[in-house]
Length: 327
Image 1: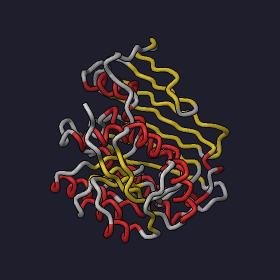
Image 2: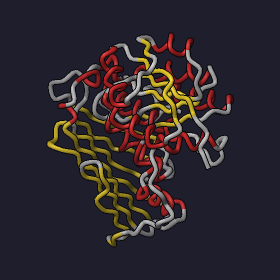
Image 3: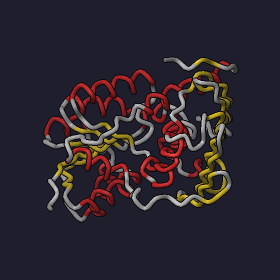
Image 4: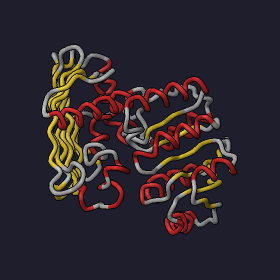
């Protein structure tokens, strides 16, 4: 059966939109890009070249929003812009898929979730791990009690993050450094898989000569008594990532290297992910939610917990003391 055509506008035409979102759009086969906005026209032209299409262009995203009719908006812009752009789109009745982190401030996460729910719109956050079969199955194992009560978590991610440069190294645009950016994937997957809610955070960051944090270490207490550590290293040679979960009845370890899942161990035994759990992408799931009338759609409420933990981490580092997570 032929899929319903969806019209989308793009906010931001940088490498992430061109190299991650655009291929997923084209793979769908029934999503039409009706406009693209980016303050740098050459970036939009690169996107059009890759799309093999001439797309209406606007330097100002507000003008694009005023002049374009669409079903949805995909947002891949500096972190500080996410809230204003996503809110404006939702207020116009557009479904929204926004890059991570959803927002910088917890109150903004709360506002967007409430606005999307009130308007009956899909609000998605492009955390790829939430659509990887291994992470989906890990969440199922936790939910079904295979690990018992969660006692603790250990998570880290390394990357040659400083080599990327650009706006991510500008605190005014990025809202933070490695922890706010790539670290957000780690925080989100930890909270989404375990369902834990952070209550207290103690954090320290090292800027390594940059204007934003590059390396960081956190100790976290969670509601219910679980504890955990998170480490982000932004001046490493390459990407490596682990999430280890310890429960009263067992343990689970997920390992990624160079952005691919390399292993998953349950009580030190390799895990076979059920074939019924299909590989998906944030964009594919987003388009499916819109076409289905939001049947099976799950609001990204975990993104509020991500924002709360992230804000507490930076506050703790500034105060050089443990802090309570603000609710």
